[in-house]
Length: 235
Image (cartoon, rainbow, N blue to C red; front, side, top):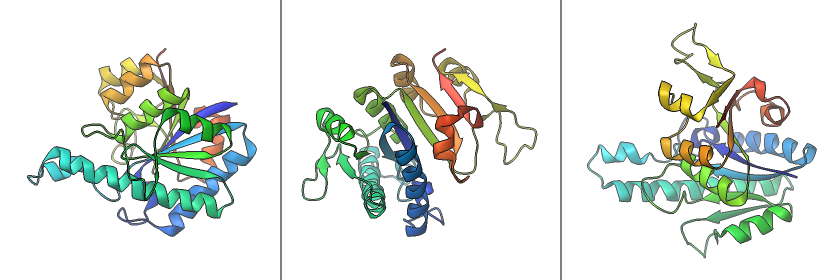
């Protein structure tokens, strides 16, 4: 039984770039359901909160970084609960676990409870970031993958089918990488994930597969054929 983390951006859950779209949630859930019902896999999910809030933007507006990041962590809880509701509506077992304790709304995250739910067939949604400021949700995905023993992170992108040497939306001659190492990311200064996340993945032998989730069927297909995206590994 393979255990994976699916990293969803906040924008993946929004049609306009802000807020939560029921239509987008349903589309994402249908993709996840296809994977859950056809592959022998245990699924964890980490949601970003860019559709709600970006801590780094708030900092430039004279807001304390810790407070700004706390608001972002709350945004991930909102997105996670929306995804959980969509999964349950699709007759899938799902549970949200938050690194920020809020027992009246959501279960608190512990590694043992998360693994127990995964082994019982639940899709576990990891909310609240790491529970501390200064860490991105990419780092959350890497940390949770290391904690639960997942060896693959599926990093879903909106309209970009992998990692390029330049922005393919601006440069029609941009080259897509088939495979990269974490050292390549650092050397080439490629914006795949932050350095903390890359270091965690590198140290724990976790592969990251970057792919376009806007193409129907890609969440399932990337598990079958990673060459449709970009594989990042430590070798």
